[in-house]
Figure 1: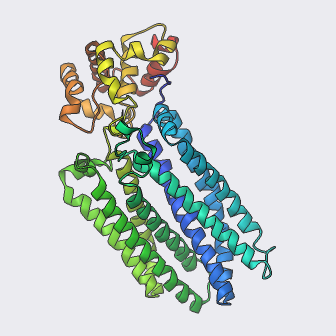
Figure 2: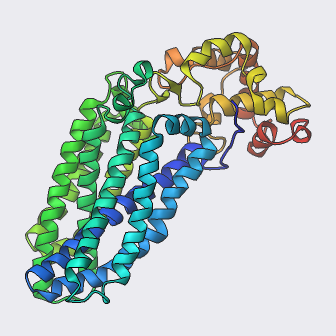
Figure 3: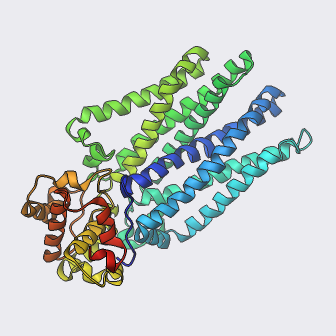
Amino acid sequence: MGFPLFDMPVIGNPLLIALDAVLHVFISHGIAIGAMSIIVISEYLGWRRRQPEWENFARRLIKPALVMAVAVGAPTGAGIWFITSVIAPRAIGSLLRVFFWPWFVEWIFFISEVCLALAYYYTWDRWGSDGKRRHLRLGFLLIFASAGTAALITGILGFMLTPDGWPWTRSFWNAFLNPTYLPQLLLRFGEAAFLGSTFAIFFLMLTRQDAVFRRRALRVFGNTALAGVAAAVAGGLWYFRQIPAAFKPFLLTSWGIQIFSQRPAFFWTALALAAASVALFAVCAKAGLVAAVRGAMAVAAISALVLVGGFEFVRESVRKPYLVPGYMYSNQILMDEVPYLQAHGLLANSYWYNATHAARSVRAEGAWLYQQNCSRCHSVSGFNDIRLRVRGRTQDGIDVIIRDAHQMVPFMPPFAGSDDERRILALFLFDLSAGRISPRAVRQLAAYSPEEAKQ
């Protein structure tokens, strides 16, 4: 409430962070950790076994991997900070207070990782046979930095679903070493092994390679991919067992696809088919079946996207109505604040609303109440469109839904505001669903200036 509100047009706030985060996970896990590890190990095999074809392969693979890691992975990682700071500044501020030192160290690891990756690439030819040991040490240090970054950030991500006793003890170790930390770490390292191996396999299939080496390398990468699939599946099952019982019913809607709640078999079947597809792809690679691997590449890529993207959606969405259970709701309002705001009103206690809306209107009040209470999960004319949720209902019906939403639909937070403000929001949503307020007007009314608030 002490921050301005941001509304992403068309796609909405939740999908904006999801798109950037899933892309970042693919690159950071698959390339920065997985593929870079494959490259370093391939160089090591070439040096140790005196088989230059391994080093030649690694030398060719590092350029596309480095470009993707540095040009895409690093900016999308920083993009997560930027987007979440704009969309959920209060939540990020709270996490920073809890995890200041882990995040500080993680940034050191992150910067070191980028510098080491560049140094590893540019010293490859300079540190030839005489400096090979030194170059390999640099490569293994790069793997350590990449894995360290993941290990640090995973504790923070796990805390957001399972803060353990932190809301009551305020203990850092309760927060960081939370129940989903180790299973999520196993899952993420398994993902990295599979995605990195798959990236190497794709490169092996799509570039000119010696036929004998291709088959030999395919078996090595297939073994790594299969081990990654096994670790990811084990970590995923362990992770789902650690999800609090109160949140497990929300698994079926956590992908944002409401049909899953009506047809749960479709949800589990989609997961099983995707997992079976990537496992079969790894088995074919392990067996050295070049033709089968080449034919299954597209299916493996789509299945990996379903699994990795699906897990990220589950991790973010299954904890609703909370950002941090026991502490903060998904709309960034603290649980302890709700009774006070219901008694004294949200608008009177919203600094930015009072600072920017000198000339008030009922619609401006309704737009602000919508954005503060609803826009973290809903959009106007985009993903999870609020208009579709209330269309066809009367104003009184919408008022009842707002009043009782938390009891009727437990993954929605309670309305934070007075009875009068609830009725204002109901009127606003009624007019919005009837087309009397445009999506553009919502942003103008809620966010910007007294002049626009008069419209």
